[in-house]
Every structure is written in structure tokens, then in C-alpha cells.
Length: 344
Image 1 (cartoon, helix red, strand yellow):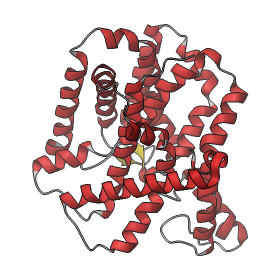
Image 2 (cartoon, one colour):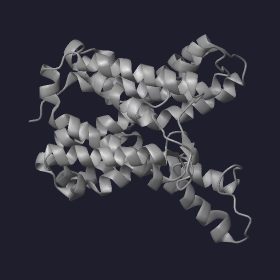
Image 3 (cartoon, helix red, strand yellow):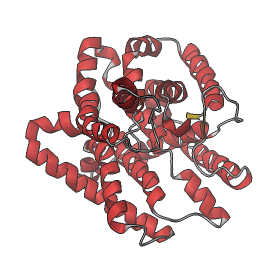
């Protein structure tokens, strides 16, 4: 039986909270005016990097030694693809029927152009809800999982060379414009996933030794954030089209350093179990799937009534709590079927 790491369980809870935190910014009506606010805002988004890193770590920890492709894909279909379809398909159908403006509205006439093509574009890009682009990306990663298993058993030197090369590529590729290109997301985030696998392989050694490492990585990541936000004036994640040049994206390096530092610190100093944190961690995928719906409801109910830095934090706590309550209620109502519907 695989060792259960409480540190990474706590890290998973933190990661889903940061994802909700970053998405709530867009309805907070707050925009930074001071340098420290720019730095703070720049550091908050990017919880998806942690999700990808944790997925790679857990894939190496739980799957490579007993890997069977058919069983692995069946689990991912039940836990990830199925909830994605249950939640997104009805909304996609509605968006296609009413021809929701902004994405995939085609000027050509006919059933194919007006309904079928937009439906599959929504489905394959995850554009239906905020953050849903992650599902087509991670399913692509799982599709090539046999190659990742082979990667895990390569020598450490070859692993580091491959990950370094892919990270350099990711720094030039950037995230996709509006996260609409799952292939670009695959190229950008795959090395983060693979780095999580490499880190898992050397985790016990790094945890027991090099006590200075997480603090140095954390400091370096903060300095990198200050450089990018205060000096370069970058406000959020870097997005661009696949084959255009827009400089070097350093956020992928910054977030990997933070992921390694946080996990090491959690495993050393925060291995205690907390019922609420365990609940959030176990419900993380349900929170991921449901929080865009809750955000949309809050946006409509509040109708831009409030704004401000403090409001952003209060709003995040309210959205997160409401999403967790909704997920818990659905789980109780559906019982064993809830994992197929909401991922929990």
C-alpha cells in the first residue's frame, strides 16, 4: 500500500482554494493601484500549476508501479471525464441554442456550422465554464500515460534533461489565448506534471536533507514575482497564440519553485490532520467543477454592488464555502453516483 502523505493532501486543499481565489478576482471589481498590490495579485493566480504538479506527483506515487492502461483510463473516465460531461453538456447545449456571444458563433448557415461545430468546440476546449479548459488538457496527459510511465523509469539525468528542455519550450509557448487551445495547454503544462513525477522520485531524500532548500526556493519565487509584476508590469498569467512570439514566460518556473517549497514545508511542518482540510482536499475536484457555477450565481445576485481588496477576500470565502456546501449536499443526495456527476 502506498504511503499517504498528509502534506500533499493539505497542499491539494490549498491549491483548490487558490484556484477559486484567483477566479473570484474577476467579479471583485478591484484592481491594484500600489506596487505591493500588483505583486500580491500576480502571485495569487496560477493554482492550476499546483494542481498539475500534484497530479504528476500522485501519478508517480500511486500508479507507475501497478500501471494498467485500461484500468487507469477507466478510473479517470469515471472521476474526471464523466463529471465534465454531466455538468458541461447541458450548459453547452443551452449556449449553442441561444448562440451565446463571444465564442464559436459561426457566420455560416446550416445545422453543422450553427450547432454541431460550436458544440464540439465548446466541449473540446472547455470554454463552457471558467477553468474547465483544464479537463481537456489533463485528459490528453492521461492519454499518453504509458509514455509517462516509461519516462519515470529513465535515469535521473535523462529525466532532468527532458524536463528542462520541455520547460524551456513552455516558457516560449505561454498559456493559450483565453485557454482555448488544449494542445498548447498540453505543451505548456506537461513539464509541470512531469516535474511532479521527478520530484516524487527524489522526495524522501529532499525531505530529509537540504532543510534550507524550500526557504531558498520560496524567496527566489517571490523575487521573481516582484520582478515580473513590479518591473515588467505583468498583471496575470501570460497568454498568447501558439506560434507567435511574446517574450519569455517565467511564471512556470516561479510556480514550480513554489510548489516544491510548499510541499516540502508542509511535509516537514504541517502533517497534522484537520477534518476541514481533509474535507476540502477530498472534495477538490467537486469544488473545481462547481465553483464556476457558484461564481456565476454570486455575480448575478450581487450585480457589482461591492468592490475592493477586502471584498475580494470576503467574496472568495463566501464562494468557497457555498461551493463546498453544494458539493456536500449533492454527494449526500446522489450517494455512490456522485463521483460520476461531480467528481466526489
